[in-house]
Image 1 (cartoon, rainbow, N blue to C red):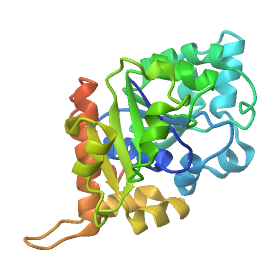
Image 2 (cartoon, rainbow, N blue to C red; image 1 turned 60 degrees about the horizontal axis):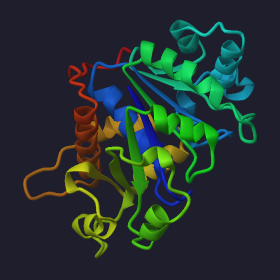
Image 3 (tube, rainbow, N blue to C red; image 1 turned 180 degrees about the horizontal axis):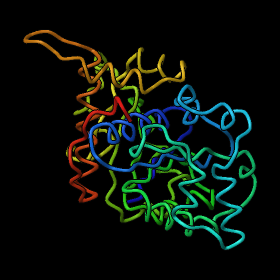
Length: 277
């Protein structure tokens, strides 16, 4: 299944961090093979978040990755195994990263996307793709059309509504699609509650989730070791009448993942220990 994360405006909705939280937790919670990748035309937070788990030659030499997969497409040699071989294992047999490329920012490589998506879906259970915000991008338009599910990322700025719905930046590929919505860096103390935002944006409450603002989560992204943070969150529990910020954050991420897996019609088995993975 192909899941595309998109936002109407850049740099405001936490699209990449939302994807990292969702994809990594699905891989940790379930016995599934997950691939994460991005098409921004430059290395992003997606690669950075897992850097401590990546071999040094991958980080500095940038072997393989999306650029290598594109070359296989050009030579008509791409296979599901070939794509996997160009990805990096983050959690053994659960989560792989296909590193981005710095050569696609100003080129139209949309013709290569269908075979890449086909190969990825043949090997992985769920493929998460982080695409640039806004419209007028052939690669993004192609991925949105091919997506089994699109996640539209928003924030608590209600003025974003006009940009999201009334501007030319809303891709035609989103028309008549059943969308999921994710509100990133959600501040639970703000007067703009989830119910108020759902009404302002005209959304369905059952198709809208949040990723609460969490300083430790953002620090973990900058520390390049998101997996350690998530494993510590999984060990946290909120006691009776006791609020735990990390446990609450994880609860909301899992709640959104539950919605996502349901619309994808996936019922993966619960995951076992990854300590020895």
